[in-house]
Image (tube, rainbow, N blue to C red; front, side, top):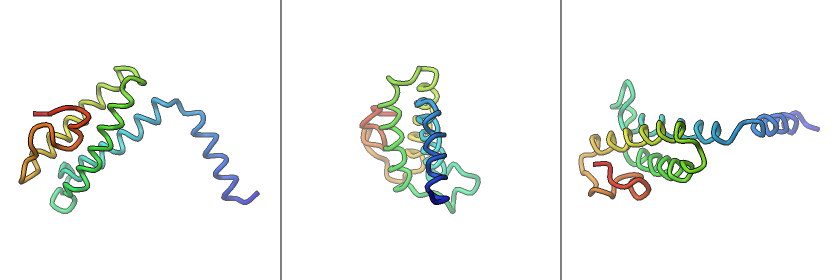
Length: 114
C-alpha cells in the first residue's frame, strides 16, 4: 500500500467518526467566512472585495443552511441563519447596484432580507 493510499484510508476513517452536524457546521462556517471576506468585511476590504464571488458563496451557504436546518437542531441552525443574514445584508450594503427585494444572493432560499 502506498503512503498516499494509507493516508487516504486514515482520513476516511477520521471523517467517518465525525457527526454530520459537525461536518455541516464546518462547511457552513467556511462558506460564511469566505463570503464575509468577499463582501468586504475583512481587515483590508479594498483588496479582497469581490461581489461576484460573494454571490456564489452566499447562494451555496443559503442552500446548505436551508436544506440542513431540518436535519440539525435549532441550536445549530439558528446561528448559521443569523450569519447568513449578516452576509446577505453586507452584500446589499457593498453593492453599488442593489438587487430587487427577494433577488439578492441566497434569497431564493431564504426570502428577502430587507
